[in-house]
Length: 349
Image 1 (cartoon, one colour):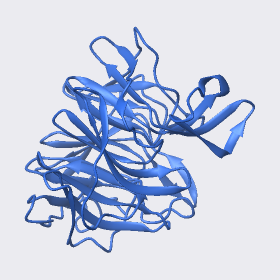
Image 2 (tube, rainbow, N blue to C red; image 1 turned 180 degrees about the vertical axis):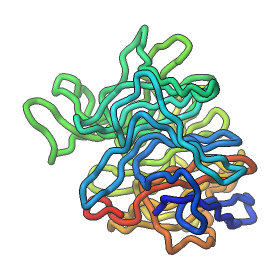
Image 3 (cartoon, rainbow, N blue to C red; image 1 turned 45 degrees about the vertical axis):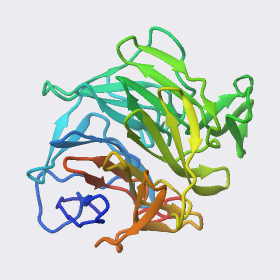
């Protein structure tokens, strides 16, 4: 895996003209060299991919990566640079949810050596200083601590869904929105999966737990998400003791959930995969960990007009991965970075 960078491009289908770009290992060396990692934060604009945090496996031990640096990949030049993060950087984290909004990289949640967190941070990207601040709220209450959640952007607000983390017994009010992990509880603290929807307004610095209608997805973590217009999509994830490939849509204009019934063949159930919008009508799914704990390298395109999955051919089937990131670049490109090539519950390379 990836201590130097190269672009690989392959056409993944006539229905979208999408390309898969692997920003990873070694055909030509570049300086500086970014560390391999999983569970990192990533976001892209039309010119750059930004990478923060995550962890690496060193001698079978998980090692969190430095919190005071941000890596930047130039999508045109194919080169990396690293910048120092100043200010109040988050603790070293993996499994955070991240997005790019108004020139800032927002990072929420994740897991550190102290467990899951519910703190929100932002790193300024446009002024060249890369100043990080802990974002405090003026109203509302943040979600409970969690990692392996997802987020969407809608009208300048960040919408978060799902994840895994702890709650006190008095906080577990609705077992339909929080599924207790029976293997993880102690002294009145229960860990588990949730299907809550929370919204943060950066301008007002306010948190709101959104009351949705329709059939919400089952509580889950390590699912994948994408946004098209005023709709947010999630696919798959860990649901109690299994992994699923169900597809759900949240309409932000009415806060209504609906499950999308797919026709024909569908991807196998998975977690730690990615879902990326590549057009107004197409979603791009890549990789993940299967129901039987196999790292996967398959690519699927979902057509929202026909509700049909199409499995695509590509050159990188020998490079399965999970807990990677996939960001939308320019011209319907999907920029895949990092991840693990093994079942990280047992082994991680």
